[in-house]
Image (cartoon, rainbow, N blue to C red):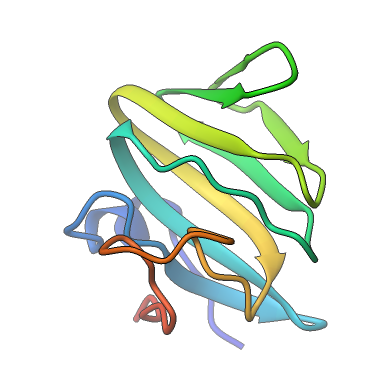
Length: 121
């Protein structure tokens, strides 16, 4: 049981779109990421995904729905199976909550896929 200071944890993450595990509970992972620019279109077939913006602004695009923009302190749960693409126009800090085994790129495998995210120390 370790306390996590979000400001320090985000500062320790060097790469954009590289989620780090801040904690786990009941098979779920709390992941932190610094993001900037466009991510890949993807979906998670077996898991919902929660996005919470700690600092900045995140737009989540959907192919078959209206886009959603999240400001600091706002969250959105993307239901399983819904294709989406997160975009940050400038550096944004986000918290993700999803099953621990969930890959960040969902059904897509490419150079941004993280199969074994680092832990926040």
